[in-house]
Length: 345
Image (cartoon, rainbow, N blue to C red; front, side):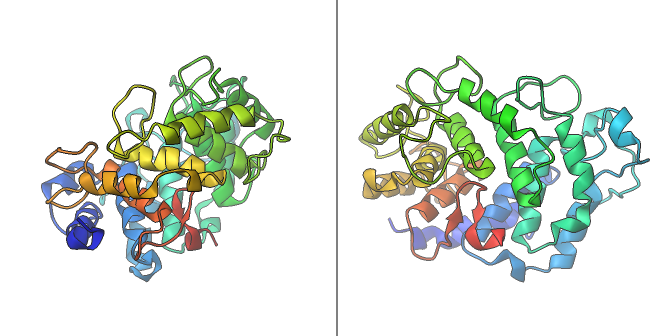
């Protein structure tokens, strides 16, 4: 089966979630920034999002950035009003009070900024100083980040979100890069991959977050030189090449040892290989065939082969992996930020 055979159905999935067509699925996810990010990024692999009515799209997102009620709120409050909220709706206004149940969140902020970059919006118009000052208060003493300003988990996902936010805003005052680097280094496991937290099992998604964050922060380059002393690069390369060699009979990647192949890891593991110049060592045809075996007749992609209904998350990462593979009709990807290359200008 070729990608173009069901391409229109795949595209329709993203269009529905983007709110361009009415659907019950859309209503359930409409207030979720991550869902809108997956839809917008999925579409951007094939279309220039800057051609979409920018005013209409921007006016829908900007009211979800909470206002600073006073200048000194940045320094003496919980600061949860300073970055993009986790959810909101068409009825939201910038003056609406933000409650603890609908607070700002690092992942939501990353998603919102990525979408704004995709449509060509000038990020200097969204009060980046407030975002960065608020975000800095989320960094913990060990260099990790919590995603919200009260009681939350810490792991590499949020270190990556912080690095991506600073990179997109072209301003690194929002984090202590040295502390963040030290935390990432502590997350490298004995086998070379990275766990979500120190002393945990190596994981494809965590490894992506670690390598992408280190590259965005400028601590490692786009090569596998053993002279890079920040992390144990030879051990990481060994783990990655073992991952490539573990392309099972279905051609997909595992996120962890002894787990089934999953379409999202075609990007998470494939993306790390791409960032470090190792992508040529994989069986590209086998990976492509695995991804296509997960394409649903309803449009979009599933997590595993044989599943009936697609989901937005795995559809987006399947598209991202096809972009890495150079599929005709797909735009090139700036892997570290998870957006198309020409969106990062």
